[in-house]
Image (cartoon, helix red, strand yellow):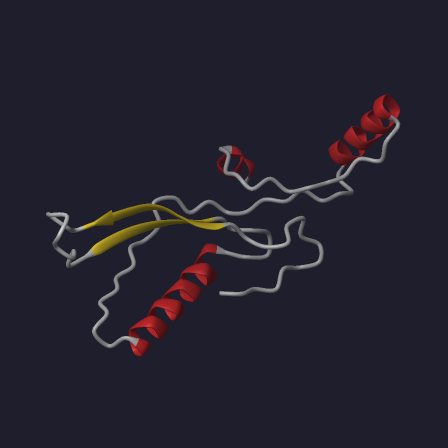
Length: 124
């Protein structure tokens, strides 16, 4: 699952991590008949949740094609927040730049944060 990131984006790539793995085993010497995983996939500017879900579905379809005995099922996301990115030319950004330059005598660097906040709920 590779993706081109817009040059205006403050990220080089998205975050994806498997954070929960639950097996269906009942004993140490019995191979589980099922496994559940939960994946945290962060949305970056230029992406939307629907396109990411299509990408995941295509990936799962390819796995099933390569492994006909494999049974896969995707559930809808628990949380589906949009990505956010403020324009560098916004007044607040420029004001912060001036403050940093005045107090630290250094050129500020803009970077994106790879985390979720409630700001996505309140911004739009």
